[in-house]
Length: 379
Ligand SMILES: *Cc1c(COP(=O)(O)O)cnc(C)c1O
Image 1 (cartoon, helix red, strand yellow):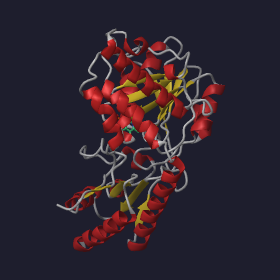
Image 2 (spheres, rainbow, N blue to C red; image 1 turned 60 degrees about the vertical axis):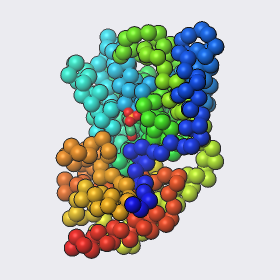
Image 3 (cartoon, rainbow, N blue to C red; image 1 turned 30 degrees about the vertical axis):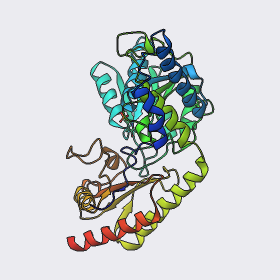
Image 4 (cartoon, helix red, strand yellow; image 1 turned 90 degrees about the vertical axis):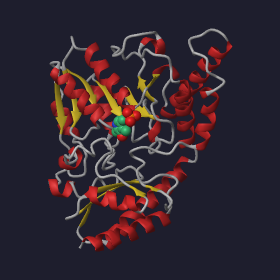
């Protein structure tokens, strides 16, 4: 078996060795319950608080504004349902977009069943929302704006600061699903007027099953899970101590030498796009060329299914994605690609390549060679 070339960092990432190293004691000798008062309990508690501070520092928040969850999906659920249930007397209207991750979209669908009204904003052909459209949809009943920081399929980065300003001006809370953005862009929740922000450890070289939700001081949420008083009584359940230690180390590492790493990633992405354009006719690069995640390439080939391409590339040891990992297997075209105006046929012929820090120019060259071979055999 050839070595694996991993081009699916938007689906998940390989945990950093140093993250694993930090976690190991908390998977073995440091097994205390953080709520216990004896020394090994206190050690676990201390480790949690160190991790909380590391996360807070990176997004310019305060440590007590960070709450640990089981991942991005739970953070999205807690943010949106937490605000909706807490403010239901004040209003029942939420604004989001058509291109959100299912963790946001399906949470909104659930709330619709319960009597909330949801506006799903359109996006343009690059995946960008319109600020005018956002303003025009705000009513007296609007209690929350939830717009993703960066899209997981096409990599488009939304105008987050401007959205935050609009939300603040109208006295409406602003939640952003920043699961794809953390580790790829610099985020400042103060400067950007973000009230709630979701993140997930496994999308930035940390462990799976651990996430965090930033909740601005003074913003009150209804809890969605009953039990003990962990996480300042917002999120019941004994803390995932190894995961929490891991996500803290991961966020610290991913922002080390950040500019340099991002520059390299962008160069690699641009090289990939350039090679695709030079070697194949009739392809379409989806998403926004400028406001884009540094490692995201989303390309439509005409007349060949993305899934078929994915499977042929897998035979050559290359991991890619046709649509997002969460929607593949459903048989439906990607809701994101449809929202930016692609036909079903073009949407179904798309491939997502999401690059990470371990990828090289040689990986791209091998990928292009393999694609050429696959296309030739297909004709
Ligand atoms: C992966 C992802 C999620 C879900 O995160 P999990 O930790 O896997 O639950 C939510 N939103 C976006 C944009 C994602 O990419």
